[in-house]
Image 1 (spheres, rainbow, N blue to C red):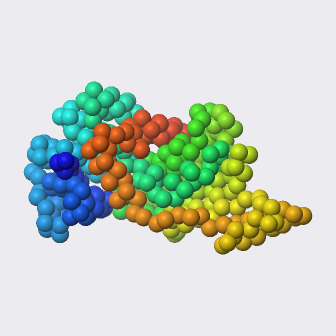
Image 2 (cartoon, rainbow, N blue to C red):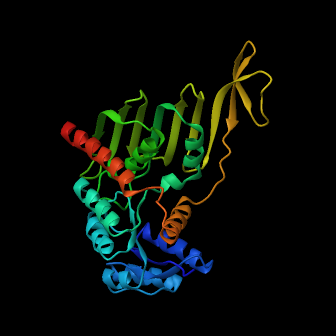
Length: 328
């Protein structure tokens, strides 16, 4: 079977890692990396020299040489580039947020369907082993708390913290809670940029689940955590760290059911609350994401993060942003 030919468009802070991983996959014989394109010639030159790659002179030239392309450019350019590629029948992985406009996101979804193209959106945390573990245990979440904090970045300043950071957790929560959102309450404020730099959203779902999501890009700490209480089908408390890829689960158990490695949090009568380390096998989420994209293109499979699921998180992010701006 012929190798899928892939090109990377945009080789900045994130695009350089796309390029690095595809270079590794190409060395393993899993894909053919046709080359890179960046509007900034010097940026492209440095990355091309590092990995010994071809530099395309235009997006059209990159498309002509490739079956699939990764769009790792500023958010404001995503729609125009993705529309151009999908119209040519090319498969696309576009970084999150997929667009800065809901109607445009819908247009890309329809265009991908018409041309039978894979449209995958780069919500990389869905490929984090932490998400796989949490999704496998939490079949009925009742309360979810997400925190995503970082120091002030030198990138992604074309969008606020909701579209930059919080959208990761919006996508995660929507993937965990299989129920419509019935209420949104959000607050936020600007600190160092023209958009919101800190935001909190409280989501209510039709099935009774509540989620509290906080994002900040002006924090002294780096934090990407989720805490979750699961319902009566499997009552437990899960705390997990997306950055460190570790966590623990606490649950009620009989006194005789203390598993190896578990610690007793508290006990009463013949019952104990046990805390056990989560069996999470560490891996690089971005590499898993790109491998999955290639597999979807090669095997004509539906991606884990479709345009439709990404649009649902995007629409929610727009409502949160609207409330923050109205509050200001």
